[in-house]
Image (cartoon, rainbow, N blue to C red; front, side, top):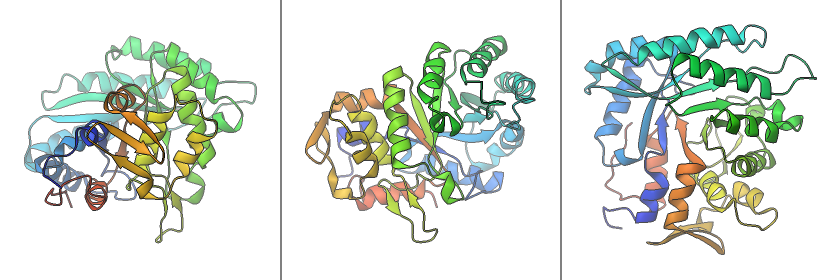
Length: 319
């Protein structure tokens, strides 16, 4: 194919991947992660690259080393890393948000977004509405309301039937959601049904989300190295794009799809099997539903999309 990606491919994948090389399984040293991010920014697939994900506790370290990595101001998504103890979380997150607010005065760093994980509930009588409302108040107090803030809801929300209520609370608090799609154990990978439920609920409640973990490859597959069945970021994109279609069970089928040939791009549309959405619908899904995902590898998704014929074979990727 030509060196220019199709308009629909551009709409689907622009700024899609936040780079998370500091996190498992890569777990790179800060200098190495910054070097990989700089290399990716210099490559012809850089239009797919989003922010550098860094824990707030390591932000100063990253800023101190970024000049040696070969680029200037660092565009970051900052993780508000605190212990997930429901009895201590409120005060810990208050302090961390204050620290993140202070980072915005640094000339070497742009805080482009913030990511926060909620703790598990302290008792079976509680819901996530109260801690989400408290978080919104803390964000206002810290002067961070102008930033996109992604909130990770614990898996128990889905198990206990509280997911819709939690997403509605995020909407009221003008916050976004974060979906964890994998990890280092089989239990860390949510089921197809759980992912489909999340996407459907997010669309219903009008809450944009980003995803994280286990999404190095475009299409759902069985990973030979771990034996884990891993979700695909192209599946998530398709689920977000088709979420308003009325056919019952379609989202679960899309999330479960393991045949890359089932997905297709033309100049004007994106398709899954017999269904298609327009270029404008893809752009709307990226802006208002699935905004992107974090990956500790930028090379793998670029290589896979190249193999699928969606990117030019000459497009270099960070290694």
